[in-house]
Image (tube, rainbow, N blue to C red; front, side):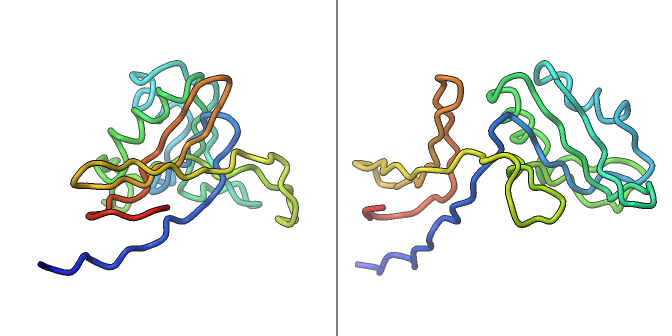
Amino acid sequence: MAAAPPQTQAEEVAVASEPRLFVGQVPPTYKDTDLRPLFAPYGTIKQIHIMSGHDGRSKGCAMVTFERWADAEAAIESHSGKTVLPGGTNRPLTVSFAHPKRVASGAVQADPGIAPKKLFVGQAGVVFVVSVCVVEHSLVCVVTHLLHGCMVV
């Protein structure tokens, strides 16, 4: 019988308390209005904000806030690691749930965020480690690791 592959711990990182996405690898010439058509098919967008430095130049990333968590998750599934925008670095977009907002000093969180919880899903040939968050009375699950064999998390 072959030994099970080494198992890694899922990184426990809080996500923002609203369905806000971090979008990386955005070309520096893009504006909010350039990103809207890319994300609008997934649901109602509350806000799009291109991140910029003190000099006003784009940092090459944006925050996209959706009305619903499911819409944000669908946008991640469709674009993260798959979509390359013209005028950029020819690298695919990095799209993920945003971390909680921080105050300028970075020491204190302005948004406490939602801490992930682990849930064991067993009785299958494959075990999933799932981060579970309850937001506005809805259950939001994000699969963080796919493991073979059995383990207690």
